[in-house]
Length: 250
Image 1 (cartoon, helix red, strand yellow):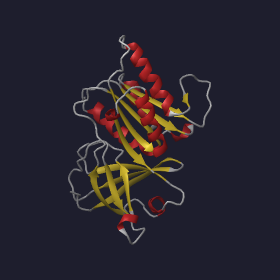
Image 2 (tube, helix red, strand yellow):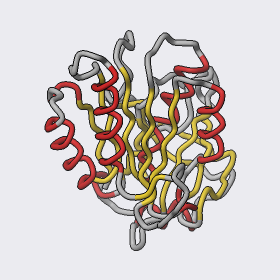
Image 3 (tube, rainbow, N blue to C red):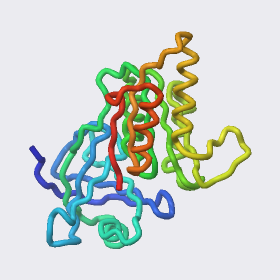
Image 4 (cartoon, rainbow, N blue to C red):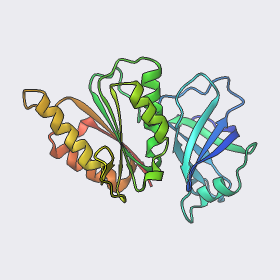
């Protein structure tokens, strides 16, 4: 059953990159907006007469903190009616009609396997929420690998924040990789996300001493081409399709 539409008020807007913006939205009618990390909200934007042509869904980039404010991170798509409205018309104080939380792209309970969070672009949003939620609440977990595919160095959304998190928490590994950059620094990964998780999975398998796959769950969020290729490659490594969870963007 879908939740009723509610009114949200934009309380803060910040540019994250040249084409990406962070929106903080408060839901005044609620004392607390309760959601699970990985869920999304749907916005009803005044851009078309038909409902199905004016709704846009965005993963929540913040984590549950008991407040009635959530954060969305949105990329400005050239020619996109929804993002043109959000970037050109919406200001601090603007009201937005929204519904949520929705979705089942959420963490397992309990977390008994390594987690691979594999994403591109604003697909980072649910994983930022999940990582903070796990670490803030001291939820028992194994290794967490956040593999973030970007084009250029300046595209790594929340980069300093996630790097700092990885430095504080030994079990959390933040691995951005840049497809349009060249680097001689061995610490900086270039290329696509696929080589990163394949390498990690093989190292973990070799390190097990039994030559068996280490138990893992794979969460994929981003562009369809990346997700389609990742599903094939992960299964080629020997993992079952049931170990893969996905959220499509675009």
